[in-house]
Image (cartoon, rainbow, N blue to C red; front, side):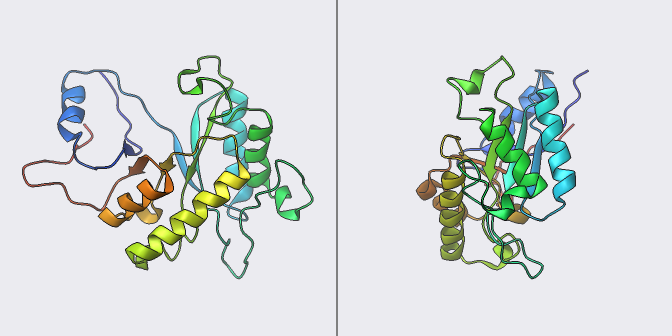
Length: 212
């Protein structure tokens, strides 16, 4: 029997169009790909724990997706994800364990986008995929479409500055909250994949996929 772990369904622009396809895969016992995803990779947030997972992924060559919150750490701190650590460690924030581990992967050329044809790479060299998890995670649930678009544009610029060779194409909305406006903002930001449990309803007559 096929055991399926559903950690997030990645869709380009819609949430429900693949529902029938997912059911067909389950019913025919076609092998499924499992995506290991960890959200909330952020300066100062459970840094030792997050670093241990990142380091484990690198050490074992297990492909893993890490969602970076690039905005202020919160809790009274205005420190954002440092964007210069690949060139210089002068910024003290580069010493944060989670920040340091992600940049270590980047320095080793093991982040998606750094190697030719790394989408189909089988050598184990490309392991880490960085995805966009927003700028202001805590405020996201109350944002208007325009505010979401501005937040996404800011986080996209930050990740491009931090990891210029990486291919960052996936957006995971904070708290899995997404609207049609979120999808439109993604298109403007050059993001083509959304990974989310989703808060957008399926069209009439289309049922959302249910894990077996």
